Length: 129
Image 1 (cartoon, helix red, strand yellow):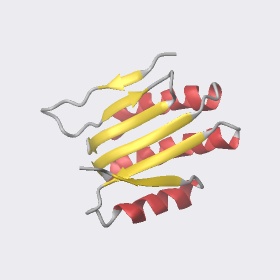
Image 2: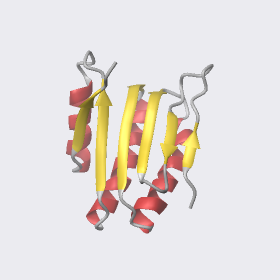
Image 3: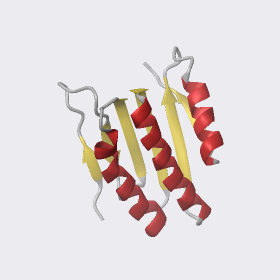
C-alpha cells in the first residue's frame, strides 16, 4: 500500500491538500473543500481509509484542517468518519483532531453534530496564526 498525496492547486482553491501517510498513519486534509462533484475527489480517500484502517487495521490519526467545506464535502467527510468508526469498532486505534479558526463560531456545532452522528470523539485544536 502506498501513501496518498494530493497537492493543493493554487489556481483552484476548491480542492483540499491531502496527505495520507502509510508509515505514520497520519492523514491530513488541509485547505478548502467545495467542489461540485465532491464524491469524485473523496472516493480514493475513502477507499484508502477502508483498506488501511478497516482491512489492514493500522492506527489512524486524522487531522482536519479545513477552513471551509460545503454540504457535498460534509456528506463525504461523514462517510470518512463512518469508515473510521467501523475501524474503531473492530479494534483499530483512531484519533481525530479538528483544527479550527478561533473566529469561526459555527465549527463547534458542526463537529458536535459529527460526533453525535458517528459516535466518534473529536479533539478540537485551535489553529495558530
